[in-house]
Structures are given as structure tokens and as C-alpha cells.
Length: 230
Image 1 (cartoon, rainbow, N blue to C red):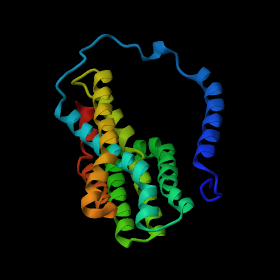
Image 2 (spheres, rainbow, N blue to C red):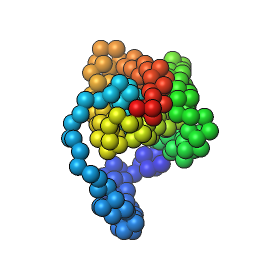
Image 3 (cartoon, rainbow, N blue to C red):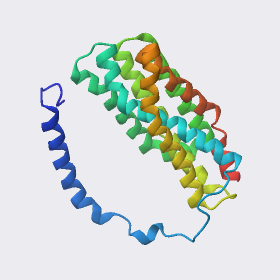
């Protein structure tokens, strides 16, 4: 909305920053106390089990996709498909809104269908929906593809962390930390990897990496139940 209205980037970010500062000032008092995270001392490093390795791969794939969406969705819409700045910003908005909706519904879906099914369907939705949006090479189809990716990714990372916490082969704290670390490694390396690939095959071609990783999530979905069995 701000881009469409011609609001400058500096003014826009200053306004958002001031607004968020007010929100944080009220919200921080409701955070859990530090003692809530206290746990018994355990090993800082441990060899991951096969189940944790699979969960780490799922987290890596899905957060690489999230990082790529954050950095490249608007660039793809504006630079590759030729939209204006306001429309280009809708790409990440569509992804984020769909992901938020999926997160709100995630607990109910996981309880009803189980993590294996939900993660598998999520991976397939992201792969097919986002892949189709890229293939059609149209701005509206691309928005739908970004939304499919957001909805598909929504429950995957939480399900992976939950499964890591249930594994019996390692204390829950180190297990969750290991999977989280794998995920955020993907979040960090994803955007530059897409950029390097785009130099050779174009941004549209590079984004098919997200399609491949989403399909990998669907293949690895069974580890979200294996983690619960230790």
C-alpha cells in the first residue's frame, strides 16, 4: 500500500519502526520469565539420531524457502514479470498472510490428521502451487503460487520442532536446538544461493530450487512421526 501510494522507503520504515516500538513497549511485559527456559545441564553437542537428521533436513529445506520468499518474491515480480512496486510487494504479502492463516489452523490440522500427512500435503502444496505459478509466468498466477508456498510451509517447521522435542534419544532442549540450527542455516544460505543460481539460469529458473526442496519435504514427511518414536 505504501509503495503504491508513493511513500518513500525511509518514511515507510521509520513509520513502521515507530509503530512496532509502541507495540513492543506493551507486549514485552507479557513475555514469559527467563526461568521458564531453564533446564538441566546437558551436552552442548551430540551426534544426531537418524530421525533428528531427517527433521533437520526438513527444517533446512522449508526455511531456505522462507528466506528466498522474503528476499526474492518482490524482485521476481518487478524485475522478471515487470509489475509495479505496489504489486511486487504483494508477493511476500500473499506468502505471509497464507502462512499466518496456516499457522493458526496448524494445531487443529496436526491433531486431526497427524504430522506425517500434514507435512506431506504441505510440501506437495508448496511444490505444485509455487511450481505452477512459475510455469505460467503471469503476475496473478505468481501471487497464487506465493500463497500456496506460504500455506504449504506453514505447519512444517513447527511440526519438525515438535517432533524433535518428542524424541527419546536426546533431551528435548538439544534436540530442538539442533533442528532449529539446521533450519536457520537454510534461512541464511537460501537467498544468496538463489542469487548465485539466478546469474546462470535467471531468477525464474533459480526459484525452481524451492519447488525441488518443497518436494523433498514431502518425501521426508515420515520423519516427523519417527522423531516421536525416538
